[in-house]
Image (cartoon, rainbow, N blue to C red; front, side, top):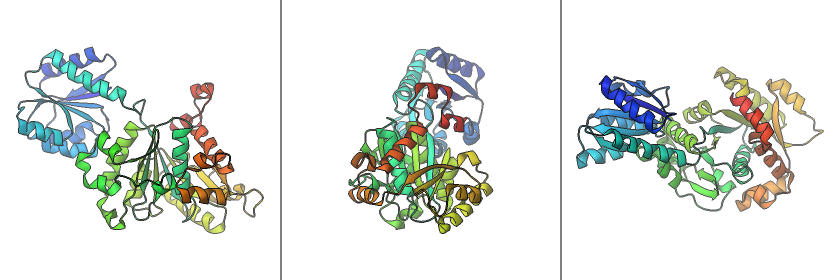
Length: 387
């Protein structure tokens, strides 16, 4: 656990650090003397799990409210000069985890750190930072949403991963319909409007649980709500989701606006989806060129060819030569099975497991999370990419 301490008194810093290390010998504790106005610079790039602010005053809380919107993954512990009811209520709204009096004893501080440590260690998805996989259509009708939704189900059902599926096609997103007939309890726009409340409980309560381990955050029902979602909201939602889930799968709009670019910037891997026709190939080349101009590394980009049929007029070699990237995988054409899956709102693996598309999706899930312990120990395909 990484702990940062904001403290203006060297002896107190040493005392806090000693208490933290005694409670958690593996904790990495750092810190220094900073003004509260410099808090963003203090934590930027360091990604602490816990932030301890010593001798906190009411003046800290406004800054902490801003911090909680940008970094909801950080647990904040205040050692405060004031512990009035009003102060505690404001601290709660700022997403502060614990407030301790200035006269705190070492034992009480260790107990507070222990509570935070226990909470973090028992949260699903805390085995390490989750990976963000972004899916984007090279051209409308590619099947990117179908693949994103059903791969999310495959990772949860077949590989027993915790998966967050987030629909960032804010105008015309319908990813939830691909895997469920249920009405989502909330959506991205509603979460954005209450971003100051964002924490793990609030996020999960806004999501539709499709299957054990799979939660979906839907796009807005009303396209007029799309402007309510800002780039910083997407940043906060994905940051929190990746700290709680093994995989965050994001279905983005084809339009390269600020929302889409924010999601792509945060993605570990980007999956452009195309079909083997000239319009798709032309648009896929344009899209890959945009990715290059944005300095996305070629290893981040994984081409998926959907509705693939061997022996067609255009081969995989043709697309690889034109685009300048290898094809990662293909999904066969099985129109009737996929149409039935979409119409019923049932993942194709669940409804038609023996279909070739189901088999291809399961195979893709195993490529991402290998089953062979020997392969996993020596580093499978995904670990090699992320390294």
